Length: 350
Image 1: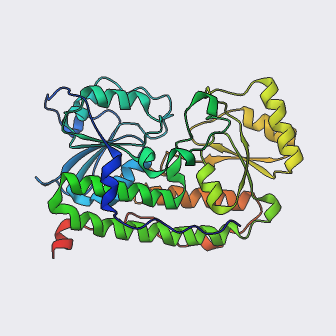
Image 2 (image 1 turned 45 degrees about the vertical axis):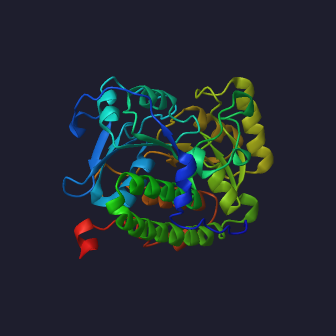
Image 3 (image 1 turned 90 degrees about the vertical axis):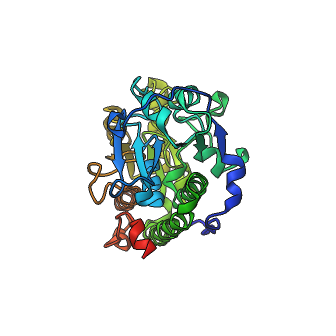
């Protein structure tokens, strides 16, 4: 098992210096959250203090919800179950971007069409927050089968590791506090509660992973979504099935993957709820491994509004799946509370 790394300090105001870029001038046409492309969520009752925060994939939406509570209305532009790497926002997304008080995207070239649309359509004063670009330095970038170095696009899936999810939440808290100074103490309190949940989950993950025989702590996934997660918990990434073009592998790649699995004695290979492929069944049959196709990286469990439609619930279910399939015992995860942690602002004031 890898050494447990310390989490970053909470709510460092200095992060404001590097994570926001000014969006280019765009339309000021009015619209409503109901016109959103993709999913729209308001956390708590409507109030005239709520910031409109436009974001992209569901894990980022849920981070903003947990930090912002009922002082934000959150619009997620990428529908659940959609390939965020290739998703093209419809023209109606311009309305929400033009109205947004804060725009939060992952960055690291994950959502380039939305990034470009935000640059073209957001108001000049609206901050565009690039979480991944702020959370790690270029010397920490990871390149792999789906994200090769020669194409210059680093792996953007930082949120799958709890320590980096906390870093994202810190950056969000700083951005919301800059946009709504009256809510700064509230955002900090929500951040503390959310970070505490992630830390507790992190400890459970270490305990669960420790039950997997060391020789079997190996991951081969359909899509390269877990390099930061794997580094934290001591997994060896064997590879990924899906190459950088986000299609199925060539026959040559397929043969190499099957040989890798056989040589590494990998007991299970992991598919995805989003990246479904018959190729996984072929690989598993040829390599003598079991196939598990229920991992998620940006598709939260259930439907939006469900109690377990959360980043934490997704993470816990992923680890339970990995540990069980690789010969471990996920009992350490039993009973962990995966619900949102934010408190209503009125309760906080009282």
